[in-house]
Image 1 (cartoon, rainbow, N blue to C red):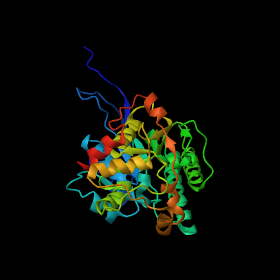
Image 2: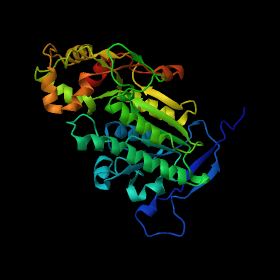
Image 3: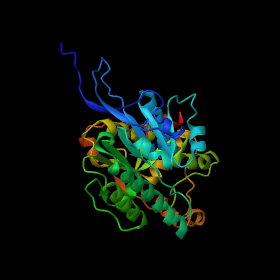
Length: 350
């Protein structure tokens, strides 16, 4: 039997405090410095990664950190607020995690195996001209900073993978078209945001494998769209928004995290990958299934003008939609656990 089950060159951080330079006086050499080792694997042939994550304190990022830590990968949280990140990732629950504010990002990105870029201001809010500017700039600024650090990193410590989030808003909206990864971009505001967001990620060094995950509406218990919809249904006030005919391209949080996780380690995951479930639904069906899952009716529609009064132009995210299918993920053989919205909602709300 061949005992060497896998030989690979990977980044391996010092075992003592992965980024002590974040808290200690400068040393002649940063202790985030990495070395290259040849790894002999045992019966567990999983190569341990060091992953730096922007947006780690968000709805998707928190679950990704949990998944990576559960598999004993080293996680470096790149944040604008150390105090906020420490509340979300207390050391007792997340031992060994590294939390870095922006001046320290370089020390953590250099020497990481991979970077996941999830940062961006939420879009489900009232859009003023200032908010629209911040929605775009929050994504482009962080992506540009991450890409710049990667590109300026010496070969020996440059991450080999960048998984950068984008959104299905790239495609624009339609009640009739079906969009996959080969579809052109739309011509509305969110499509413009996504084009510039992705264009910034595309500037990364060509030696770095880049996966752009165009994410749909993420369904999970503790955040995202469901957190806002469930209280309405519990008060018997839930129902379709607008016509109810608009498409709702969704993905279960667990499937999205698994998709990102796979993109970190599988070299086939490259280019654009739609982060949506295989079976998008009309919004009316989504509301019917949600009402059924929580034992509440979903017959009372929310009129367009009511939502616009709350969200202004931001209501277009809900009032208009797009039918997006994950052609590339299916080609790659990604095993969706939740293919139908009924099963996803029953799992989340059980």
